[in-house]
Image (cartoon, rainbow, N blue to C red; front, side, top):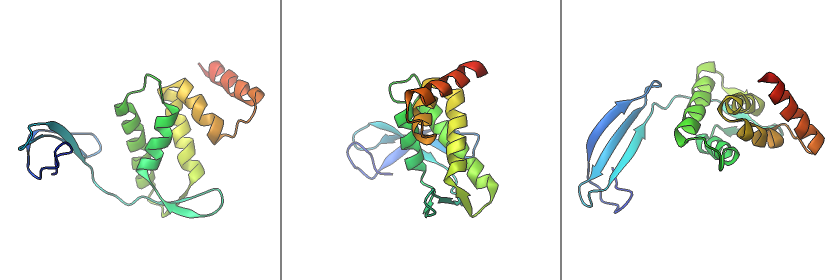
Length: 150
């Protein structure tokens, strides 16, 4: 494993832990500079192609999903671990479906549901784009629905 600090090839494993989805987190120490860093290993299972609104298809992109959720959670008290967990749950659900193709709407609905539980402001930010809330009245209506459900 290459050190992200000095780019040296050698490192030693200091600690190993496992998560519920079968992934492995390894804490490593560079043999050259002594800096510590973490690596994650997770099983790669087949994920379906995502069918976009315009009918085009693209591979599921975990990083793209993560970026979208991070943007919604910007400057909110949502930890990186919570975002990683949400993305992992969505990816695992897609893999468990066992389908070759899934509508982007299905993924968006999973994100909306996850953000609603995670952080209501992040939920509203995502909903403005995802649900196409293009005026204050529509945004207020979504906020009112959110407040009623609490």
